[in-house]
Image (cartoon, rainbow over all chains, first blue to last red; front, side, top):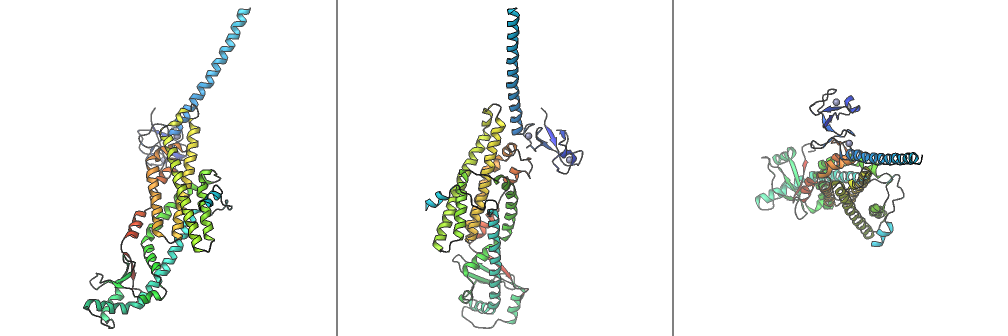
Length: 93
Length: 335
Ligand SMILES: [Zn+2]
Ligand SMILES: [Zn+2]
């Protein structure tokens, strides 16, 4: 995943709309301020060596993925049960 | 003595909605000290002005090796009018004056005579005044920094209550109690207990904060599948709370020492606060800001601004530790 930059000038429309720019951008197209690396999730300023997400957002993303797996797992189990019932019905016919 | 601490543990003061803020206590204490200082310096100043002719006599005497009682000459008096008198505290606590010679150098040290003290100048007060004047600039800078950090702390502390902070409130209560006591030795005992309680509380909160940070740094929250963010948030709440009380704690102890007139202890406390920041926060600021949902990661953000807190007490400490404390009294305007 590519790192993103953002504008940290609190008075800039780019900052307000949390606009993200590619790494290659140096300055903000709206206000001219030097862009910083920002978290793709919460737009907080990240240190230069950091990933695309801050620690908290990265965990949040993983948490959601885990919850999603859990839920879809349950959905599969449910579908399987229905299938079994259907097969039983067919067999009993 | 310990009983007092146990009894008071965990009880917030009654006036919880509008507590006397440690920061305010410290700032008030500093302001009072500064006013006393200015007053004392004015007194010293006016006494020195009166003394000048006799100082000149002593000067003559030391130069010539025998005591010569003369009136200061026109030329010498003129030197004083356009020059300065330097006051300093010697190692032994004696205060001496030095007069700047025509060549810009300060002449021999002239002891300030007993009669000056007899006129209501307290040597301790004078020494303190000299100390405070030397510290004034640094104190202003420190106030500004504390003011900034304090804002982020107050929000966190609203409505917090647990046993870890009991010692803090017991220290606070003991100190407030000491202020309403007239008996000097009882008062001292209470102040001592308050300080002990506060420093123990600060130590415990520091350990707790340290272990919370280590937990985050080691990524231990990852072990709970699907609940990592909850774990991060609850650790961050704990860290913010610990920091808040540690901040209050240092402010309160500095205020107590300032009120007690122990300025060097006050500077040690502020120094200790800076050291705590360096040891606990400085290297973890990036991690803490990324775990704190209220931090925007900028220099103005919660943790990077805390990281920068450096109460410049090394200067103060140096000045206090200096063998000679010096203030310059400008005679040019008055004479
Ligand atoms: Zn911008
Ligand atoms: Zn984020």
